[in-house]
Amino acid sequence: MVFFMIQLALMILGAIVHISVDRSARRRTTGRAAELVLLWILVPAGVFGILGGFGHVGPNAPEIAKDIGPDFIPGMFQWELGWNDIAVGLLCVLTFRVRNRGGWLDAAVWALAISYGGDLAGHISQYYIHDNTATNNVWAIPAEIYIVGVAVIAWVIYRRTTPRSVAILGPNAARGVEEGVEAPVS
Image 1 (cartoon, rainbow, N blue to C red):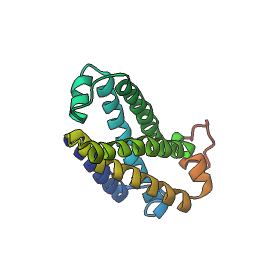
Image 2 (tube, rainbow, N blue to C red; image 1 turned 90 degrees about the vertical axis):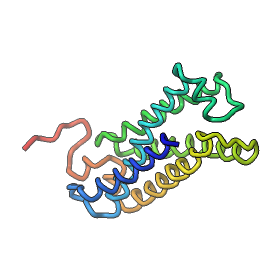
Image 3 (cartoon, helix red, strand yellow; image 1 turned 180 degrees about the vertical axis):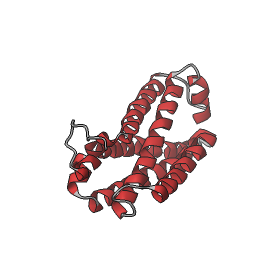
């Protein structure tokens, strides 16, 4: 439960603070706010995904499996889930870099939505069909609903309200900086 609550609190508070102190030329625009919300979903979700993934493949895998539900045992599926969490998490974390924003945001949002959406379906079915009330099954449900829902909504708003050159090529395009060329330091 704590794992999910810290994650959600960090995402919400981080986005609020970042939006309020933003110094970007596009600050206070809907597109910029959506971009910051998106980053505060993707990067923390990525970090927690990597941590969770290492939990599934690490020495504590049996305890992690038991916390998900009484019928779960460490095995190949948990191993595969762990590496998927690490891969999607790394993709999400790498959107932190400005030069990765363009198409990386699209890839990260949809990888996260598919991965966490599938996890959400599994946690809901475990709860309703198999009466799995284990803490890490039940508390994953609101976290996954928030993460997937807000990420997709913020992505749609960002793509509809941000100039195409910025949304596709990343924020450097708005400043006239070409990909691979370092901006002069003033």
